[in-house]
Length: 120
Image 1: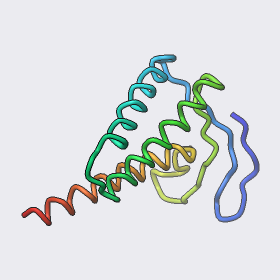
Image 2: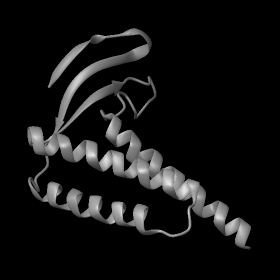
Image 3: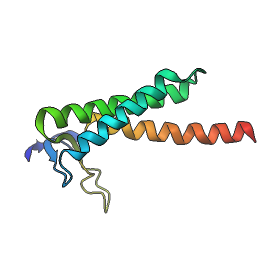
Image 4: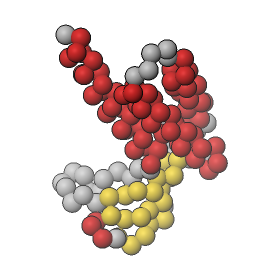
C-alpha cells in the first residue's frame, strides 16, 4: 500500500490493491456481467432513462474494474476518506468504478420503488 500524507478535510490519497482469493475468476465474472449488461442496454426496445442510466453506470464500473484486473492483476483503490465517525474510521478505500456500481445499484432501487408506486 502506498499512502500519502493526510490532505485537508480528512481526505487521503492512497493506492490500495484489492487482492482476492478467486484470482482470475473475478475477470471471468466481470466479462460475463459486461456481456449481460451490454445486451440489456442495447436490446431493450422501450427506452427508460432511469434504467438506461443505471445500466450505463454499471457498465462503466464493470469496465473500470475489469481494466484494472487485466492490466495489473487486481483492482486499484485510490480514494480513502476519514469521516471521523465511529466504526467508519477510516471509510473503506474505493475507486471511481466502485462509485459507478454503487450509484447504479441505488438508482435501480429508487427506480423499482417508483415503478411500484406508479403501478399500484
